[in-house]
Image 1 (tube, helix red, strand yellow):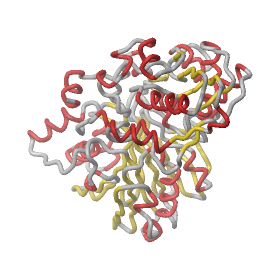
Image 2 (cartoon, helix red, strand yellow):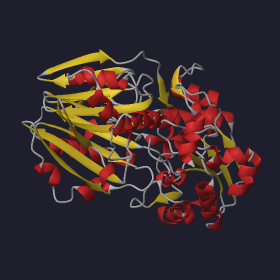
Image 3 (cartoon, rainbow, N blue to C red):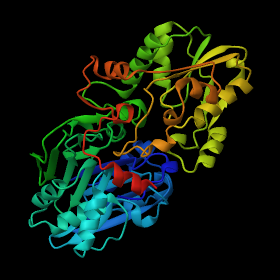
Length: 468
């Protein structure tokens, strides 16, 4: 597993998109990555295959930076996969996915969203057996396992490899004559199946289908492998399903216009989170503000539930990235100044409720509260539409150590004082589950960062050693 630096923000937050059997595959993958840009802004890449020849174009930066000269339109072939990424540590071009590997059975391109909790152990074992690794990516571990499998058939070799690894993976594997999508038995990350014309496609989020006018079919199931090739689609089981979908996808990661289930949008869920937060932690105020963009839906729900006006009192600069997934701490602090401004005429002299989706380290909330007070706000009540993040995550969120979690070091009252709020309340875990599921049954949700109950075995000693 790559060296994890907590100040990087999100660990292994990525987006994948793939399509099989379309005359404009590279172009459609390009547009798909555009829709998934919020999942990774450090690098982008596309690999296309044309009559057995694999062509790669990738680079550092946004999709529009990497493909600024229309390079995606020049990628010939009727099948392609793409990837956007936030890298671990200091990203280099060698880490940019999709990665292409040649082995005895042919050439494959892999694109991966997730984090393998046993990658370091597997890597050490393979190195002792003579394997040589070229990158720090988890995906190379999968490639080595495929190459060392006793099976020559790619599907069988891939199933064999996935039986060894643990953790979260939404994986696309492109071969000369097929495209394979795989989801871990817990289904920790989203992966959707769609169809455009007669061609099947896969995406981390359904918002990518909307852009290319693809029909949404369904989500890939936990522990499922979907193989597309030669006008056929088949489903195989790769593990015993034990659903534990990441609740942070609902809270923060996914775009509001995506569906993480067949009939419920992320916006609708976040609105319910806000209403549940209002029921648990009401306050009298003149206005409700949401921190753009991921908190706006929850703020609307909070305002509706308490019949308080919702206002756009905070305005986002669209050309600055998300601070939770930014680089060093000093960069995050500077980016908040660049990223948000206050509409003084709206908030001056008012008591406001500031709704945010999460509070991890407290530095961003502290800065926003200060911006509001500098704009003449009379009182600021902070409401968080998720529970306190009290435990590390090893499945894709860069909170892999207790040390950087503010709730580890401070009580809620102390956090309130630190950020300068007049009051501070979090959504309860029960409230989170009720808003997402509609009941108190948390089956099928990963809540590990809130309650410390992990859906897979975690070697904490190994994980902590890697984070030092």
